[in-house]
Image (cartoon, rainbow, N blue to C red; front, side, top):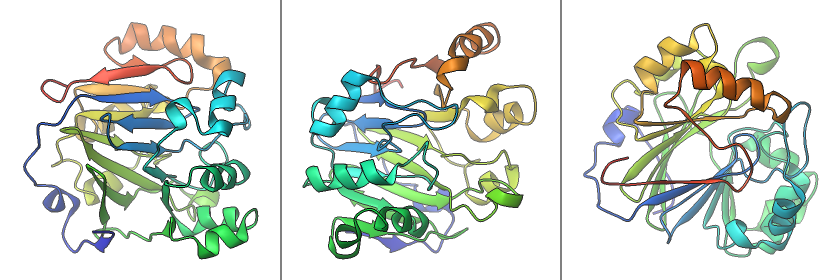
Length: 272
């Protein structure tokens, strides 16, 4: 199966029996970039970022070399996803280079992401069957399977004003008996999370932008929609890492922070 548009709520689409697959590994890349693997299927989200952008990080020299060589954790990527077009989540030149070198990877993202890539590698983007555009809508997520993973993609707003037109996609990834949620740069808007059905969805691992944990509306949103047994704070600017770590240790000691690219966490499907 490739893609299908859902016509029910996200919660209804995902009520399927779990499968007792092996443990999964989540590997930190830059910002919100991660690789999620069950040792057979490897999925990369927001991972084609190499250079620093604004206050946000890129890859250290050793990790950048592995990216360019499509080696180490970057080898054998079955599926690459990008939440939105901002360069701290997907860098078009590096995305083009990766897709040209990683000949088995399928890349799935929005028209905005692919539009920027088209400026760098038009022939690849317009002709390759490995690069595919999706357009999920509110109440109509798109669901597909790749290897042993099932992926549901649905919109969550990036915000208002200049961010209102940004196509920001969340990804719910069922792999290795574990359900992982990646929200991109979703605005802290409860109505969006409610529309997506996340109040009814069992999530084992939530990748949460660190600012959700700061004083404000984020805590209530986490409690209602993102209260997974494993919470990983992501998108921490390198220059703020020590300050964020100290704050999280005091206020949210159970939340995991993977401080450097290529750091890993293993999660059991039996007891995530």
